[in-house]
Every structure is written in C-alpha cells, then in structure tokens.
Amino acid sequence: MNSKVFIANTSPQTILDDYKKLLNDINYKNIFDPKKEIVLKLNLSWTKFYPACSTPPWMLEGVLKTLIEDGIDPKKIIPVENKTVVTNVYEGSVNNKWKKILDKYNVKMHYLTNEKYIKYKPKGKMLILDKIFPRGIMLPNIIFDKNIIHLATAKMHVFTTTTGTIKNYFGMLREIRHFAHRYIHETIVDLLTIQKEIHPGILGLIDGAVVGKGSGPRAMDWEEKNYIFGSGNLVAVDAIVAKTMGFSPENLKYLKLARDLKLGPTDPEVNIKISKTWGFKRADTFASRGQKFIYHKLPERVEKFLLQSIIAPWSYLASSAYHDYYWYNFIGRKRIRRFLKTSWGKLFKTY
Image (cartoon, rainbow, N blue to C red; front, side, top):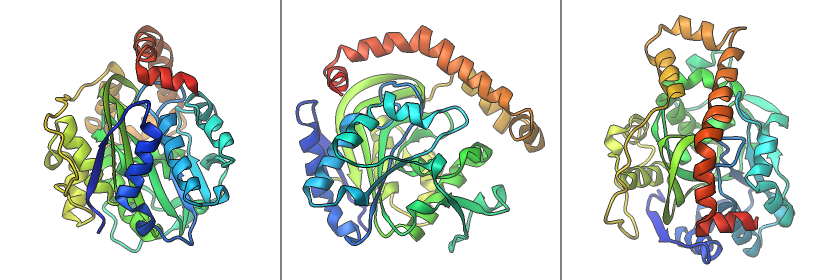
C-alpha cells in the first residue's frame, strides 16, 4: 500500500516545480497503470471564486504540466467535475480559471452533467449507499477502469469537519447526492470502497498553499500556509491534513470508519513533520445550523419531504440567498480583496 504521505513547503514562485517534485516523490508512475487514462477529479465547492474553496489554478497547472512533460498524451488526461443543486460547473470552471489552463494545455474538460451514467454494483459490502439509492448506485461511465488523481484543497466542512480527497469523490454521484447528507460519513467511505474497485491507480493531492478554516466549504476564512500534500492512499493524506489542522483523525467519523475497514492508515509515515498544528476549530453559520437541524434533529421522513420532494427547491433558493447574495457580498468580498493583495492572490490574478 502506497500510504506514505509527502509534504512540501511551497511558494507562488516555485509552486509548479513543487508539484512536479511532489508527484515524483510519491512515485506516481508506479502507482498508475501506464496503459490507462488519467482522470483528474477537480473540486468545485462554489460557482464563485473564493480562496481555498475549489481546486486552485496553480494546482491544476502544476499537475497538468508535470503529466504532459512526462510524456502523457493530453488526450489521455480527463478532468471531470459535476454540478450540485447549488453550483454551476460551467461558470465555476471559468471563475476558478480551470478553463483557461485546460485550453493552454489542449486538455478537454468533461462536465459530468453531460456524461452517461451507468449502474454500478459494488463488490464490497456497503455501509449505507445501497440503501440510500436502492434502485442502483449510478456513476459516470467515463471514469471506469482509469487512474485517478484527486485535486482537493485543505479546508473545513460543516458536515465532516475536514474535507479532502475522500469526500472529493462524492461529486461523482449525480446531483441528487444531497440525499446522502444525513449519512455523509458512511457514504464517502462507501465511495472509497468503490474507488478501489474501479480505478487501477489512485492518488490524492491536497493544496494547502491557502487553506480554509471555519464553516466550510464556502463561508470560510482563509489563511496562507504554504504547504502541499500528497499520497497514494486517500485515508493517509486526509488524516495528516486533518491532524495538521488540529483535529485528531480518531475523532473524525469518516476517517475512523475507513481505518477500521482497512482502507488506509490514520497514522501513516510522513517525509517531514509539521511541528505546530494550525489550531482550527469547528464553526457553523446560520445556514449550516439549519441544515444540521434538518439532517440530524428531524425524523428522516420529514427531511425527505423538505429536501427530496416537489417542494425541495425552497432549500436551493435559501442556500443561494444566504451564500451567493448575503454572505458573499457582505463578508466574502472583503476577504477576497484581502487575499488578492497577497502573493498567492497576485498569482491567481495572472491566470
């Protein structure tokens, strides 16, 4: 098992070379089947740009540049991302500068909203996913039997406390994946079991150049940390990033479940140790408190009526009103302006 986690210090001046070195340190070529295509699973948590929220452009470029310089045909690189009921993946790929980078390297973006989905019957035992989707677990046909690289960010999440490479696969489900939020920890561990069945090689990268703390994945504050992380085991890299943030992996349900199912270690070997944790704390917003009340306080039948019936669009409108209009305009914009004055913000503007 390729469970060693590699950590590197980085800077805006060296970030592309640092991703190349990180991939080589991980020895990604030995993890992957060289005959297979490579899926790049991007992460879009918001249609709008916000620091640490979605895959940053320097991460995408660093990975693409390395793969192509190593002789991989751009046609064999398949970047994918999906929409949610509250995000627009087409606009998001422009706002986060993905489209510009992909065009530069002649790599085609694959929007999962346009891809064919097929029913997949897992070989391994499921904790919950087969019960949430009793008619079958649907996954995009384009990802099967291909290597995969996760391009995640180091940020917090109101449902899972931390979010990284494991939860990034949640985006492979169709846009009704919010049906699984009540059992999000079990769901993403089931998806990790599935990943190991359908991908010949799996690699997880987490960008911690700029990180998100507080009530993520959208309404966060950000900090510059200047680290990047990577491993051939998703449990390992997510656990180290969680520990670096200041959380014990043992206290994060999805990581403990994954460890107990022998999907990966929560105390892996690392190449360097970060001596001081970041001291992050759990936080909520008005919107996340409402979501948690529905998912964890109300009976499941009431949740289904509110969020899975004909009246469900009320919740999408409420989320958009809070995040896209109130929070972004009255809180987020000030934080973005502050970010754009930093060295990472100046790098973002070059894209």
